[in-house]
Length: 202
Image 1 (cartoon, rainbow, N blue to C red):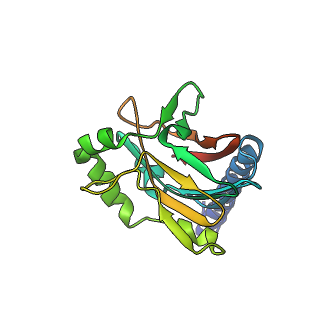
Image 2: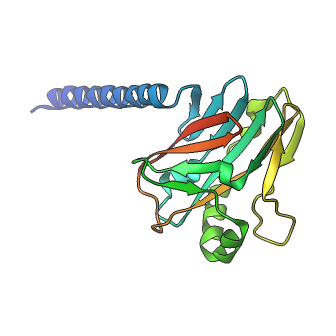
């Protein structure tokens, strides 16, 4: 094979690879449209759910590719059209198989495993996403205050309404000590209001 033929061969292979990548991305979008309606992907690891009652944005750029660990970190922000008290038990993560539902961690368990939590928090710092930028029409921002690495007030629930954006990091603990690749479902549900977002771990 001469240099010209070699160049043509490489060009064809690159074009085929690009077509496969585009087809794969299209397949992922189609799957999300079918299984996760009312969601919109804004980046590799940023997803928004919106319906007339609730808007939720989740970002997980670090955890998407760094999940060989006990802890998963998902940035979040949300707003609802009516007053809702969201408890920890109302925020869950369903495994790709659908066989296991993992509830948001307690502060006690989170704080007791700080040696494993800290590397996740530090690693995610440079990859944090501006989840509040999707709520530009609302200026009142409140923290969920569900977790604290150091001393400070920690809540067991928070109130969401139409006038505020509630934001905070969500931490889930794997029962097996790590997170297998696949599409998980982040679910926030309370009193008939429900948002389901895909969390895709690679």
